[in-house]
Length: 503
Image 1 (tube, helix red, strand yellow):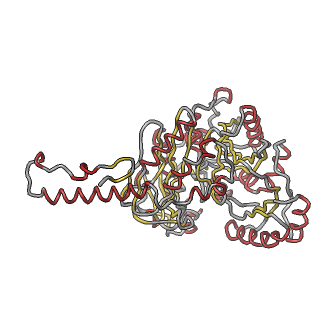
Image 2 (cartoon, rainbow, N blue to C red; image 1 turned 90 degrees about the vertical axis):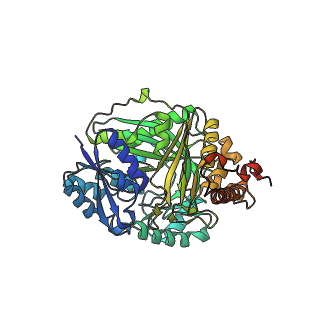
Image 3 (cartoon, rainbow, N blue to C red; image 1 turned 90 degrees about the horizontal axis):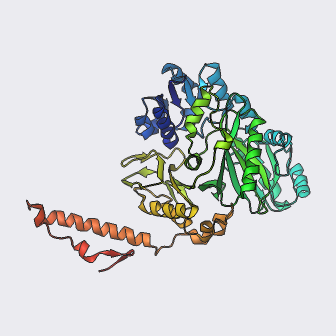
């Protein structure tokens, strides 16, 4: 039985994994870089060990150092979270060699699904529909031009080992092919150490919909339904929801069955995600498989009522999957917003800094997965996402209303965040109606551009004025002994009504 888990990650996912471990009576071990000494995951864990310098390749990506610490603290298992080493087959293999349980699929499964070209072949063999395209790596720019002309434009050029939008180029005409081919290969080599690329027909007006799956070591595989992940900027997800407002019950059932078939084709064990593209005619195609926990997994937990990390731990303990497909259902609706320290008015540049004030929303149906606190300095070395805001409600309309409320309550000062940008998304008619696809942000870019005369600035001015008034009253009453003699604040006299100062 697993009694101690080392979490080979940082930030909110490390804290999230530790919480489930603590509920199960499992001790946790944090690892951290020099930049993360004061991070919440370090303080939350039962034990914590320094990995190395701030640069990820010398700390969180240092396989041998992570293994050394796991041996030193006598951890039974390692949970990789997502990102960093979570889909690294060499890391999973090293864990096995050291007799440490890797909480995730086998190295062989990772390799089978990590290579996008090999994964396409397996899906075709398993009867899972795939986007028309090449089944072999491209050998030259000339070959790319020829195949693009055969498939027909637009086409998508992709890195075989890619992810997160890296090594991906959309091509609209023959004139764009050579440059796209060269830049995609270069980007793929620098990001993944592999310059293999391939082509797929571009699915126009697509929805990005994924299915959560769980598989055990005894051949049992189930799915936990769908997540709509089409609100994307530069192929990076911004807002996710479950269930998808686009799927019909019949299509949801069919896609779920294909997701299970895809997982069984590679003998999948653990938690994973099958990603699909669905066109405007509701034809769906296999996109890729993520052999790890997803950033957006909380919305599945909210609507299905299953703790996915606990299920990962049980599967890693070689337990038989206790969940049955026919017993699972979706209840209500959940939405997740990714909270990032970035300047949305300056091309979404990362905005590290010290959090001077933090007010997190709460109330029924509200969940925050985060790792920051007042006084914490967000480092410049890692992804700018500082947390996830999740709401659940009985209907989609109620979930949107709740998300609007909590985004209004969420206050962070000391650096720029995308909170205002997320608030605007919740009011865009296309989103409210559930009639959107991956072109949502591009289509509504003008509505998402900051309005310098918005109510948020008026509110900020009001808050500043209120605080100044508070300080003035403190000064006036510094020699007054009785609290009831304190004069009534003139701020209350002026008041604030509907976001407008009355003076």
